[in-house]
Length: 331
Image (cartoon, rainbow, N blue to C red):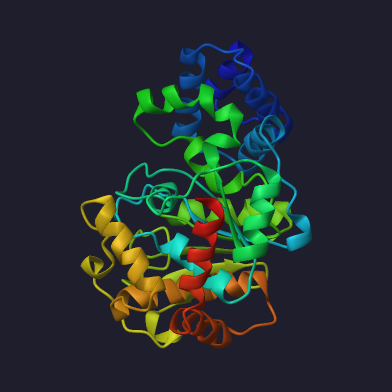
């Protein structure tokens, strides 16, 4: 690690192989916390590279628990977090909208870090018990079209980094890794970023991984399609800026998609969306994110067709049915 730090301080970058080895050594507890903190701080100050991020990702996946869901051709929808906007659980809602539309969704997530309610929070409040049992995960996917992997049960290497990240109190490369280390390595992903620097980095990473993807970023700093502003979308084939009107939707105000002050408030909004009892703004923001994710999973569909399928999933009750079946299997 001393040589790694020397090179980083000299403004050198690391290769994918080098950062993979560093991550494996971190997972095995070979470095003191002070050295890990110094490495993360220096990398953050000069900006993590695609190669470095890919190496950390590979190291975490190699030291973690893998789940083979490849026969199902699954999709994941996740944001980087850290945008400070405290929206309700938009990406998790979108997962059940896609599940209700017949897509297989395998979400990887955790408790909230900067908002009131993260994916693990809202699912746990429905009585869900998290598991890393592969048979249970597959059963959930087969019966509800949705399965969930609670990050701490899979990414074993992260346990030696958590205290360092908490002590640093600033974003690090590991904030970028969460959306990239889904243990089932999904064939398609919809990733939300809070700024255009992250947007470009994720786009380059996903191109290197050769998966189907959609990277989204709202121009006013939301790590999802918020409909509070124009938003940018990148896929394997296009990169384009859209306005809410391009999706046939009105612009919304930030307070209209606010997640509330408590986990209970956030859960109520979450449930209302899936039960078709939410406000138009809340429903539209979920439909917009669902549509872009749907197109990442099936490029033969137009955005208009994806919007229609997402709305039908909610209005028919299939999205709510998927959640209820998932809860039944996992309670």
